[in-house]
Amino acid sequence: MRSQLSAQGTPVIDLTVSNPTAIGLTYPPEWVDELADPAVFSYAPDPKGLSLARRSVAALFSKKGVPVTEEQIVLTASTSEAYSWLFKLLGDPGSNVLVPTPSYPLFGYLAGLNDLEAVPYFLRRTGDGPWHLDRESVVAAFDEKTCAVVAVHPNNPTGSALRADEARWLADFCAQRGVALISDEVFADYLHTPDPQIPPTLLGNSGALTFALGGLSKFAALPQMKMGWIACNGPAEDCAQALARLELIADTYLSVNTPVQRAAPAWITQADRIQQPIRSRLSENLKFLREQTAAGSWRLLPSDGGWSAVLHNPALADEETWAVSLLEKKNVFVHPGFFFDFEQEGFVVVSLLCELKQFREGITRLCSHE
Image 1 (cartoon, rainbow, N blue to C red):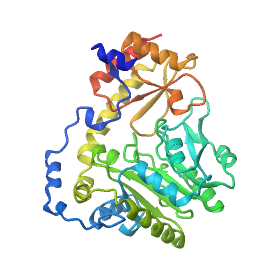
Image 2 (image 1 turned 180 degrees about the vertical axis):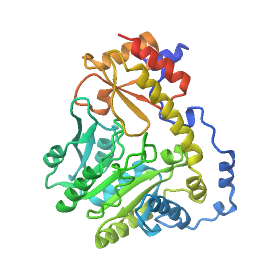
Image 3 (image 1 turned 60 degrees about the vertical axis):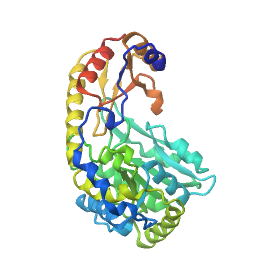
Image 4 (image 1 turned 120 degrees about the horizontal axis):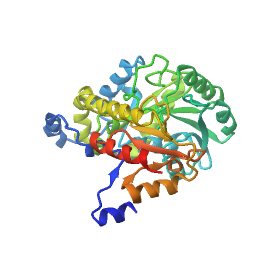
């Protein structure tokens, strides 16, 4: 339907846009100069990534209160590749990984490509309260084939971050059962409001072998530059063995290109120059969304951070049909909740990255659509 409207020349307001390079942001022009270093023509591969790039990533965790060295960092081409390497490292064919639901529909594919199974545990809400980790569902999902538990902090699309007590519980759960904790922290620098109860990273929960994932795609809004990272912490022996095996996996692929690695330290240290406009955009759109949903049938659900917002209409019995109707009649494209495996009907997910004028017009049409 969306492609048909576009082919007909009908303008569609896309409230799902997640590409930061397509939302009217202005990047520091001198960032391009970082790719002009003559050293990019020298190939001196390091399986874990160039030292200068890994040092810059390690510094990010030190600023968050978890001192790590460059030796605890492994660079990848993306967070998806980081998952793939960790699944190869931690699992055998037939193993499973526990993954949060609702969540972005990625884990099933990545697990399957590595001959693993993604088994869901749940994020749930009580009444009008915030999302929380359903600990009983984690316990119920675990079995003898489980090799890792994935946390997304903050989650996409719910925007919910783990509180300190939830993070400790999850780390203890993994440590007691001898499985790894994988913390996807790509949106960790986009909390809506600082909260001392939200740990800036889960990497400090060192009782369990823990991997924290991030990348330039979200951190510096540079998805086209293709560099992610894995930071490893935990019991010294487990960490050393994991990093040695990760280095072997990384050496097999050598996937991160030299120009990006050499440019990464400057982009990382100057990332606030692009993060700040994004935070401003998120704040403005979130404020408008709160105003538009203060009355009426739609409710904006609580969120700690990230680039998405979840709307709920308890009276909406068929969100897919409604979303198609919204596209047909109002030319507005949204994600129905089933795309993210919400347990019930009535959920819609929109992106807070949209340009202000487009976002306001799209949300106005959404709220008026029966």
